[in-house]
Length: 399
Image (cartoon, rainbow, N blue to C red):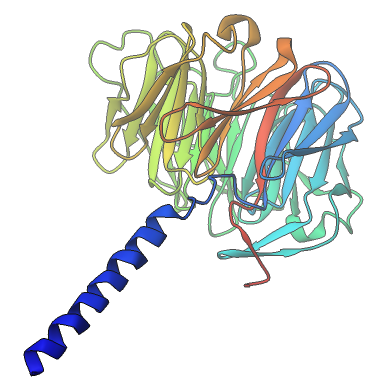
């Protein structure tokens, strides 16, 4: 009798199990979408129009900057963006109102412009790190800096001089000092030849020990700063030591004039058109090319600093793991834009890549995993420069 009772019971349980599995399989998958608090800020190629995209809701809001054709850079927290008109010596700051705290956000009001405006002459280099914006101003070689938390209260950032005017740049170290370029006039032109370390009063903490044939491009990880030069990549430690990393054999006159730091990958990279994109390893003093593309239109990191995107002159967009150089996805964009004509800019979240298309008034949203089309936003005017801001998370106030 026990066996006769057990078998029907097992049959009922088994049937229930299969019914449960079937029900689960029939449930529709949750639509893949962008994070609820991720935003894309877009500036126009010529006009003062500034557009804030909310991809998850397929919504956009219109704002106006003081000058057209501005560059745009995300802050280190993502809450703010710097909108820069170098020709008009003005930097304005845009607040998303989205403040990230680990894996959730606090909403601090509506999107709006901040109070702070920087008017130092010819701002050319924007550094977003350590929860502040730092600006190098070519017109007088000064550094302007402001904490993100002060952008609604200070009319202007703090400012200090560093030396003779030149086309320069700087990196902020964890100890609060800056590695900043220095023009000694041993080489003709606007590019500097050396790097020194200064404090926020402009006093020299460590003088230059290496002279190059010209410096352009820089990135840092808080402990060290790397600068591009024809002589090699110049490494400056926050303790003052300086050295050059030599270029790979066969580089000839090529050199890396743009330097990046991929924070999640903990990897430095450098690029130069007609040469290529390279991973730079300061520990081993070596450089390794990423992919084989030498001629490209744009190179950019995703927001997390895990991947590097390369758009070549033929219109092929490729995504590489920044730490290993492994290609993760590749796709020709020729069906959606003419890369040479559009000269698009790139930005990326964890799941999506955004590509501007100024001639057609569009911003294309691609799936990051395979670069397939996800959505296209029609934006008034000629949307060109863009930055991913806000927070790449879905939860508000920890709920």
